[in-house]
Amino acid sequence: MILIGQYDSPFVRRVAIAMRLYGLAFEHQAWSTFGEGDKIAPFNPLRRVPTLVLDDGEALIESTAILDHLDEFVGAGKAMIARAGPPRRRCLKICALATGLGDKAVSLVYERVLRKDQPSKIWVERCEMQIGDVLEVLETERASIASPYWFGEKISHADIAVACVLRFVGEAHPRLFDAARYPALGAHAARCEALAAFAEIQQPLIPPSGD
Ligand SMILES: N[C@@H](CCC(=O)N[C@@H](CS)C(=O)NCC(=O)O)C(=O)O
Image (cartoon, rainbow, N blue to C red):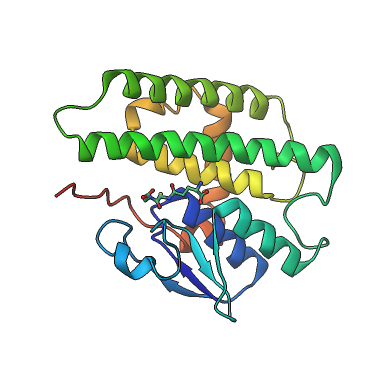
């Protein structure tokens, strides 16, 4: 399998960490979405990452859909999400809040870099409000959970998604993630980042140049 995308993307990173934790071997093509979009296009006309190319050439897109396939591949006993019912829905919701937060944080980076001196005030304020509100909700929920991970003793896709997104927000928009204001999330991120898979799969943020 070939995983396309750089590890400064919280979406690429969550997929790569899951593959690492599942023990799935893959080749990594760290193509940049802006600088090397033409290399991505044959696999994904959206030129977006992550894109996962399976051994038979089929290309999967969207981190959630990619993980859905990988979960099926490794089987329900190993999958980092419940098979069905409310536990599955709760995990998917935390993942959606985290990746939605990630979407807004990535959008803010593009706004800053690509629109340079003329960012849309309405859009920036909206994204910042959405990021702040999601952080508050996640902080409140995480603070109410005593277990090492969001859904118990074992790491899940929700834990990975939250940690990857917190890392991205902290690097891209340090003003928006004040660790003192979100102690439960800070502790959550620290626990995940201390794991070997997180330490191995990381890359400092390289925003597009906008030129
Ligand atoms: N919903 C997507 C988001 C992926 C995403 O936003 N990827 C960014 C990199 S962090 C990207 O491909 N940006 C280029 C573009 O959107 O044109 C997922 O979960 O995979």
